[in-house]
Image 1 (cartoon, rainbow, N blue to C red):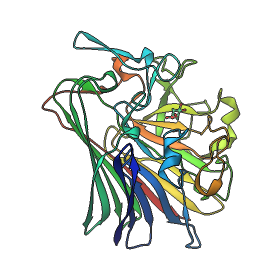
Image 2 (image 1 turned 45 degrees about the vertical axis):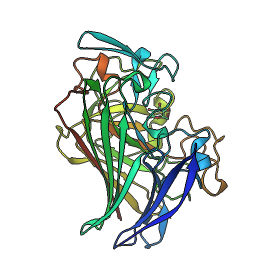
Image 3 (image 1 turned 30 degrees about the vertical axis):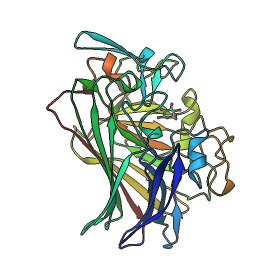
Image 4 (image 1 turned 90 degrees about the horizontal axis):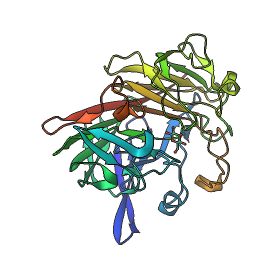
Length: 344
Ligand code: BGC
């Protein structure tokens, strides 16, 4: 087990820290304190050759340019809030509208664009970094001073665990996730259409044209959203307007459980996702348009990667029948998501 710190880079006069982690099995991850971001993740294929399965950039400057949240921690509210507005305890709050008429991924300067405090650690089960951030009252329009921790653990059982914890001094809404873009071929394939996906979700939340849930909890049966058995991502993607960008209502009942499995047949890499969260956004990289130049000069075109974002449902602050995203003083928000790797 190793944890190494690279030379920090400057961002607006403050240092951004970079960590390289390696577990006992030779899996490697790198993390940075800007956005509490997962920068790279090297896992073996069925021949034992390791390859980087997440998209991103070679240096901090790439992350500061046009960047659709690659590998970042998303908050205070992952995904969309309609009109950027909600009423909480009788008071109305207006957030930034940074996605057409809606608020997306925490606003103009969300948790992906701030520098987190970082504390590397080693423990018998693996190596990791604990990131902390104090989001002040009123930041991006959200009420309450929010103290937030995101802990990455690269464990010695082929798992990257991400644990979230938060407390607040006034009621607020909170929805945290990680926005990694995966391509399990580690760059050998330019799109993810041949990846096989399984999502243990019997329902999903249909959306309007601006990707806000209509409020309906719809059964996946007989729709292109039925991933209860493994299906090639490309199989039915053209039956979905614009491609997949939907929240799945997980069958996990709020317990840490396997909720999704992705298999890439050429490399044999398999990713299992476990989470305590009730929802999972499956985003098939529809808006990647080839204008972004990522790692090693590679351009990221449409569907060159997918995201599986464990989360509460989009627009929950305005949809009282969705699981609540309210966090109140005295409560401790806790959530865990695990990416587990294997080959077959
Ligand atoms: C959203 C997409 C969005 C992407 C990058 C995903 O979580 O669902 O609609 O384009 O993030 O911003």
